[in-house]
Image 1 (cartoon, rainbow, N blue to C red):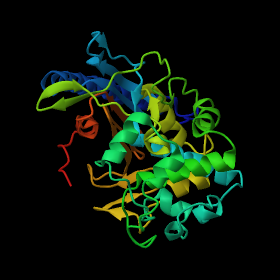
Image 2: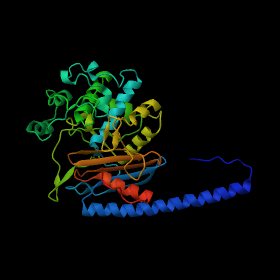
Image 3: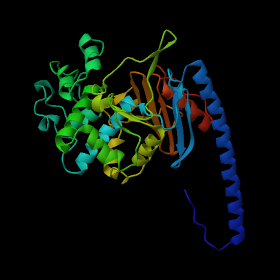
Image 4: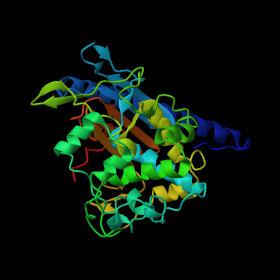
Length: 373
């Protein structure tokens, strides 16, 4: 925040400027000390727990720390960099929710509409589900059995969104829509189908023309294994303490529930767009996105539109989302009142990047790590 000082009372002004300068200098020194400690901690995580990835911290709209760690490709001994592209998995849901809100702003839908109004081939048992309920995971639409032979086969050969939904189309809803919360990847795949139907564009193209290009997110996109992608990080896992290549997954499978790749700097641009009305979404759309809906409550936290809303860490309001897919894990956290953004992307599936982000936040706030809920 900038303060405008009137030219009168020059002596008082000089004192204020001097004190402000000292405070600013102290804050700068404190930040350097905090991130020097955090850098050492993350380096230790890379050695002791195989962390590999990239980390960014931003405050007041500016990047105050960013660094990459560990290999992007273990076999070729290529290190991660700030340009390394990681699969962000379920962080994709924030983008899908934004696409829906953009379509609403253009008068093509309303979030309280029934999904079946636009996707008439939905199973009969699901026809009472609204778009809002898909966005907040309160629809009762079931997930596939990810451990089944059929699901594992689909991971390797890929599938269309319609084929993915068909895997569970014969199942009843898990509960009456709007009465409970349960995380549903299928629900966000239906939203992707809705976006394609109403925009007349493939999901990947709608993302590019309406989000990535306007925000200059030049290192982000919808992932395809067949695409030659410069600076793509390879995915890894730990099995009995031994590092292995991650199992293959065709990225048509996570689709609009988890198919995007990005970098830490691009996700910081994304964070800034959601923090400022009018940069991408209107104030009303952002209000809907970050509302704490009473029916979308789980373990004391709320789920907005592609956003988890929590007050369980450090006693501060926090917006966040994590993600995990074969070989990768991710998190973005925003403390809106402190204007603090933390992004951790990892090409190690078993790593928990939200714990690393919590550690950085604890250092910044000078508080102990939060207890697990």
